[in-house]
Length: 145
Image 1 (cartoon, one colour):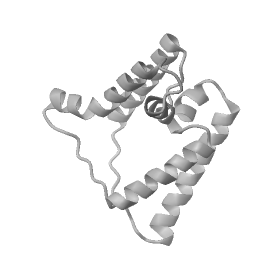
Image 2 (cartoon, rainbow, N blue to C red; image 1 turned 30 degrees about the horizontal axis):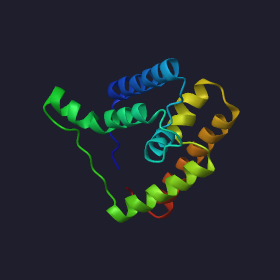
Image 3 (spheres, rainbow, N blue to C red; image 1 turned 90 degrees about the vertical axis):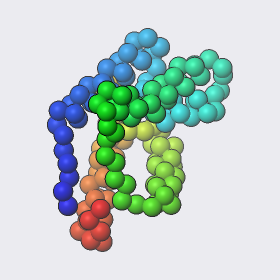
Image 4 (cartoon, one colour; image 1 turned 45 degrees about the vertical axis):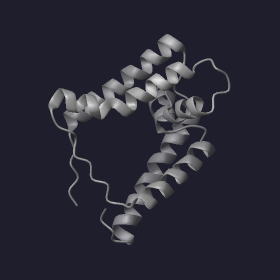
């Protein structure tokens, strides 16, 4: 299996995510955890904060259109699984986010920067789970996705 790694694009993307997290923390005092932002936009506990959440989500969704506007092409995306598997994966991630009190962006980007013990444990758990899953899928099941 060939895995395309783009170090420059990855570095730029990571730096932009980090910058966005810092700006959100400095301006609103909020952690940039994608699932918490989505949940707060869909099920707001108060009317306060819904606008910035919807604006941030719009920015996340509109990224590919801006990319096309700037470059004239869209990034190639190959999803090697069925929509049913994507839905099942989404449900599993939702359960994990609930049990882990946050997602990879909240714990990995913001929590590690704040040296949160809970986030360190969460990120180590994410990474270990990823390594085990890839090993099982590729070497035990032989799927080579």
